[in-house]
View (cartoon, rainbow, N blue to C red):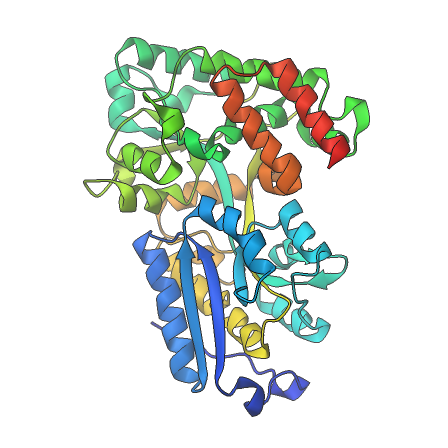
Length: 417
């Protein structure tokens, strides 16, 4: 691996030899069991530790849902990490408002923007301050298994509308092939359907109006229709048996084992399904990707995307060494390796053209053509309202709530959060 060099911050007076001496930098990441991704992290850490005697960077990996549940408590304790993964959005804003984060000095942030994605940096900024460095951009799309699509007698490349998709789901079901794999227990994989339907129906302006409490907020005909379109899918019983008892990691393993025709998931699933499957997962030749379809009469565009703008942010008591490491951890050299090895779609401009993997190229093309990129709604709207979106997505999937009740509950949550 090309040697990663630390940023030269001494001239700015931030880092001194004494400040770096005997420092421990603790990093908390979401699960990176995808071997190239985890190995990339470990290699960057090892290279940094070797190049910086007296600094010991330690990285811990935590399953996504456990991470979300434990992080708020960790941030209030002496066990808080110095750096942690962030999806940006409303949850990140809450953490900044609550004083849990350390801002990066303005002069250093200005230097970082020369090498890192300006848009990615902006996603990790709040009220004029930068708190982290961007890593990857993510987009959610419909994956399909070519072998299973052939068995089911469907052609996913012809999916242009929601009705097209529902028709192929129904055909697969009738052919005895499981249409869709989903990790319902974690709820957020289900919220992708509800979120994307809402985006296609109301468009960017409609979502922003809901966030501002305009047009009834969430309790309006567009959100009700999104729920009703979602229920059209649920009524086909499209998911694998016992889907509400399956977490994402297990679900992506089932997908990698060839368990269905479709899954709605982000680009990270390419490696995740291979790591979680029992037989090495699906090859690029077995996989295809299509954008989420349009809904008849909707105000959104087929090129509007849902996804993430993720990276790592600093906690309030992070040592200066953590700032130095963060630039290396998320820096151009690490992102170039990620691009070349098909680990993720990087945000650093110098790394973007190095993506070689055929599937990641398709996701990069979807992102490159995006007319409006919406952050995952469960992150964008913050922990309370975002959590409610996940909840109602699951409750509608189990028949415990109607689309009308879901819209009303979301608006009540928005008003009282």
